Image (cartoon, rainbow, N blue to C red; front, side):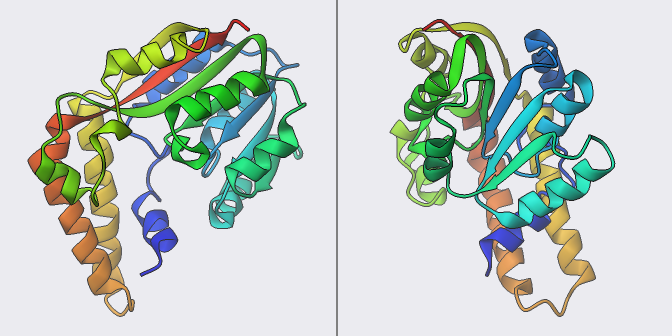
Length: 251
């Protein structure tokens, strides 16, 4: 089964591919309140809804880094009727290579939500954004955290994940402080946010399979989404959190 295809189907009805509510995300952007002269970079930008809204609301210029060209094609379709052409530079490449091309750009706002794995984890991503963002600029990270110690069974269900891959919420905030960043604000997904995200994720795949019974990936997709749903309900809902963390760069 093509994992990119599965992800595209599962997330096709999500405005943002993370469990933080739209209201919280837009409040976070209003806290930053970029100027029209600001330059923004989003690493792991997906379908670029966040960048499109930043251009719509604040007229910034933006750079989107995304590994999957299918996501960027969807982003371009969204952008064409909503923002001026050329407002977003789209880079389809792995994050490490793309960032090397952007090192001297001097951004005012750096973003990475749910994609820190692309740069080697939470701390390496913070370090990268600290390099990319000007003094007094803003950094917005979206990261998972443990609400409680994960059981071995849950880690195994996640494919053999390691407990060290996430921290507590407090330690996630602290990781930025230890790099000299100033924490300004954080929002976390509550249970309703998580349920909205996970059930929409699940429902999108179930509905697709009902409507496309001849798809060669039919059985594999149903097996995967149903296993994921059981894992979320049994362990994930009480164990895994997700937060947005806003910092000011004080370098």
